[in-house]
Amino acid sequence: MASFEEHIAQANKNLTVLSEINSKITDTWDWQVTVGYYVSVHVANAHIAKVSNLHYRTHEDVKNVLNPFNTLSICKIPEDIYLSYTKIESLSRRARYLCHQNQQNPQIGHFTHDKHFAKSIRHLDKFLDYFKTLHSITFSSCSIKCVELSPNDHLKIFTLIPQN
Image (cartoon, rainbow, N blue to C red; front, top):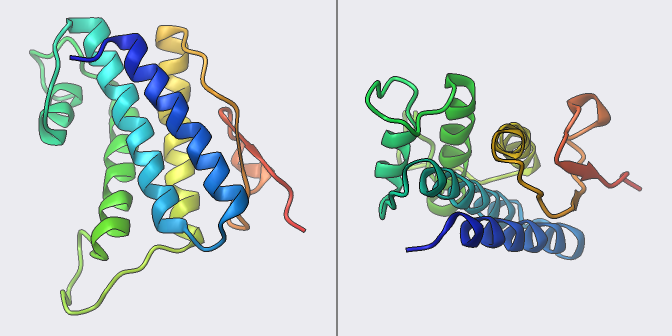
């Protein structure tokens, strides 16, 4: 199974891909949200590998071991960080399957727009900043543009590209 360093290397590779997609291909919010989710998946798996030397194969197992209410887990994380992770996952599910977790009408497709990307970036920034501090991780530079994000978001990991 992958080591802490290998997971971080993949997370950084995905951050580079996210920055490239964002700068070159317009209206790909679904792909950008999905790439962001996989950044968080690799960082979560890096944390689990480093803290417990365990490796999980399913997204559900990863969520369970990170869950702050799992009293027996040595890998649990603070509730606000865990909620950011689950929000990123939910937004990615929306992007991949055109569904909304709390939808009343399953006949309607739920597309991903810039406002969903902005939400995912806010949560991803919080998630990455937590692990950056916890494990002294250096993340790749990731510059993004999105009209729904502003300097008032106070992002720590992502750099905003001014809109024209």
